[in-house]
Length: 162
Image (tube, rainbow, N blue to C red; front, side, top):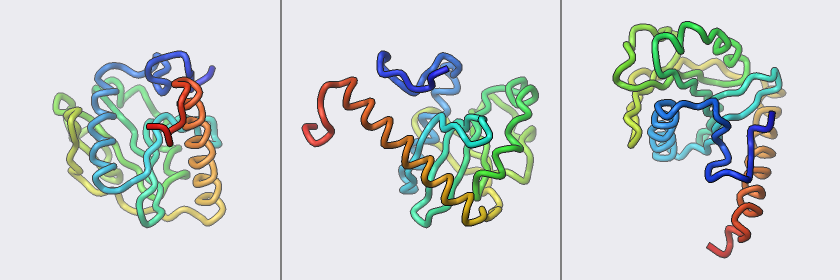
């Protein structure tokens, strides 16, 4: 299934994200941009799993943020521990209606209201190996470039024209 479609208003929505998840994502993206991170939503990893948000900090750290919008969403999704192999820091993001005590202490925690977000708990660092960091950085750059080109094709203009 294609995760990027140039035929929709928002090519990063493939029908699997709820309105609440999109609200959480938007607020987290505001926070990460304020922290000067480069951000990509819905990035497929080499193990075939798809991370909700991947960011690269100004220092080159790779963060993965997993969005959870309910207790049930957290309980049924057991793929998140596999993300740790692809990031320096693993965090969860949620909203005020989800009890915060369900999230593991060994991960960071972000609370989002859709307009911004607040880092409630920093994520402990688990430094990536050099080959994994290079592979993740190249994947991030390649996908970002493909999405930029797809956006230009979809709008019929280049970003220099804007």
